[in-house]
Length: 295
Ligand code: NAP
Image (cartoon, rainbow, N blue to C red; front, side):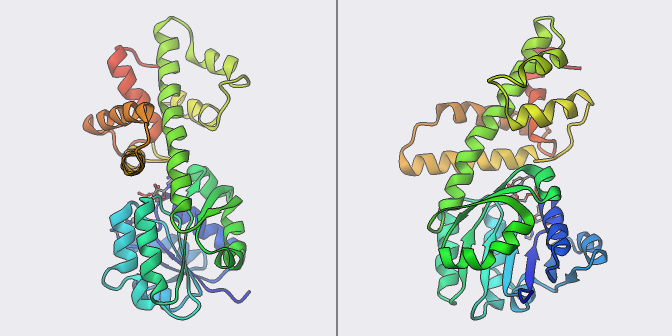
């Protein structure tokens, strides 16, 4: 295998993705802002890099998975960023969820250094990252995608080329419209059942095979019934994604009234100090409004 893979950002998602790249046999050089978070993957066979620039200089494919738009801009275009390690043939992949307009700008900047950029946000959560079953939606050059496909296949099970630079991030924003709506709907149905006097566990069992079936209803209620509201996907990241949707909707004059309402609930969640909890813990806001707890 001739590819050398670089990976920037060892958060909840990055750690699982790097483990799967190592398992697939890729040599992986990593960098994380908090250096101690590199220990676990270094023990599993990765090499610790000195900076994003160093990782890019020593890789043929360099991947980032960090929090938000300014963070991606920093690790790519900032001091000691990927752009400083750019070289002929390097392909850059961003698996973070950021604004489509920023993904296009980054692709243009890297193109000036003859580096192809693919915006390739992912869906499937911490479980998908750990199990290598992520859904990956890709914007950018088709020949670059073909070249990096084995890397995507090590991390995910569904890879779709949706269009040019930024298209992957548009698809991810669309995905997050649905995810936020599912989280809020699940929270409402659990509180609704409880306050109307029916065991929410029984309700979930009754409906999860019917028309309400979805990833959220499959995965989240068992965790919530166990009192587990740990991330997963942090609520403040969900709010970040909702704001990406609202910004993009404003840019294109798209009505998104349901998403505006869901954004208000997630904003309330953050205001109540629950931003580090899982996005499914939005049920906590609905519990407070209703004055009941689901367990
Ligand atoms: P996380 O656990 O909070 O990790 C965030 C990572 O980004 C950490 O490695 C952090 O470094 C790094 N980082 C943040 N700001 C940085 C900066 N300015 N410079 C350098 N590094 C920086 O988040 P996550 O859940 O892995 O999410 C990462 C991305 O994947 C996000 O865009 C998120 O929306 C997306 N995503 C997440 C999920 C999910 O279920 N968790 C699912 C799909 C997509 P430190 O360790 O130093 O803090």
